[in-house]
Length: 107
Image 1 (cartoon, helix red, strand yellow):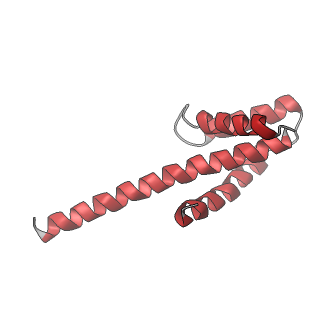
Image 2 (cartoon, one colour; image 1 turned 90 degrees about the vertical axis):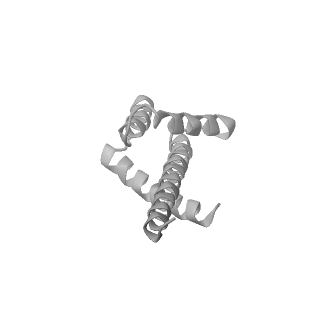
């Protein structure tokens, strides 16, 4: 194997690892968002955990964060929780930073 092939293989492995960490961080962010939203909705205990799983599952409906945003925003509106989409997006960004740190730390 030439040194070029070794470098290419190294870049491919790093890309795969980066993508895996990104996926894990997004899933963790969605779980954290679900638990936070459950609290705002007055959901506790096992029901809060189940709701967080629904938020994680919502992310598989389409590419991007729009599906998660729509789910939580719709649930807030249905329960009369006053929070704008911009505020919700800011919370998602905040939780993404937390999730990235947790994934990198291996927790």
